[in-house]
Image (spheres, one colour):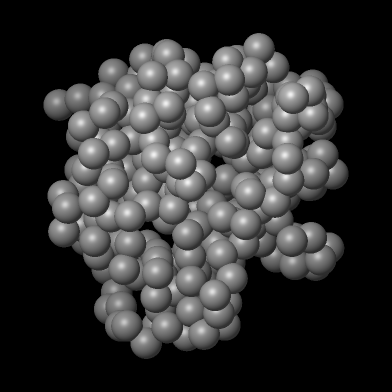
Length: 268
């Protein structure tokens, strides 16, 4: 069994053991609250620079321990001070040492400081219940990993997100997955440079796939962005945003790094 299959099998068991009913009106309640606003999408389109999604990540199967004792709220504060466009909060505990409580506390911090920074619930989504959890915790976007799901599951997650007024990021790694994603009329596509079956990273994945994504869809390059040069490479391929986790969590100056990434767009 490859690593992604292992993680998804574990997540399905986790969901099965903690399943609670979800109803259409539960999602519509949030949809009515948010209206037509899709602030995650709008945040990535809201300026002329390269958009930056700062990720809060303590460990991963590929990198091992990154920042075991990192305080998620303090990390969010650093990101906000550097004017990130959005924040990704990992909520998987077994493989990434994240918690749903992290997401709750980060979104509460953002509200208290009246900063319009949207959060992504970064997890292995397999059931609409997780979408409802994301809503309740204040997230404004979810991740849909195309490779990990059947079409019916993708429909179910996307429909729940749409009802609740959340954006869906369709994550792909190869051209076949792009073709599958396009059947769902995605607004945002994230190209993961890391092969989740083997956890090998190659920025050329973004360079090859992003030019094939139709105009009008927001494109994010995810994983493997460790330097300004890395970001420049995927930006030149057409990426409108980068999602950066490990490099920011390890950095002695994450605010400075974010400012350098933003500056790439100003050089055009």
